[in-house]
Length: 140
Image (cartoon, rainbow, N blue to C red; front, side, top):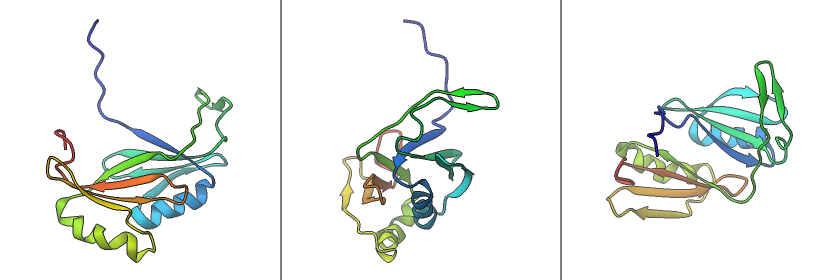
């Protein structure tokens, strides 16, 4: 099998939500993400490090989406999904307090096998969110 061409990084992640505006407000309140794009089917949020979180209205992208430069193929998803955001070790104590201060219960705190700590909580659609310090993976 030939070697795959290189990629630089993961650029976008998507969640499928009931109300993109309400979900965007949650992610802006909890994480401070800035809105980059908003239309009737989705909101795009800037994630530090050059990534984008796309919050699509569930069922809102099941048809091709014409855009000025071409057509975006249809996609959709359901069920509870998972995202993890990297945080600096020095911010772990602040993250221990931050969700609760916003009325969001921390569902779990896990010390991972490589020594990193993860905190888990949920967004309004029930998606599992994790913030983790280095030591989660051999690559982080």
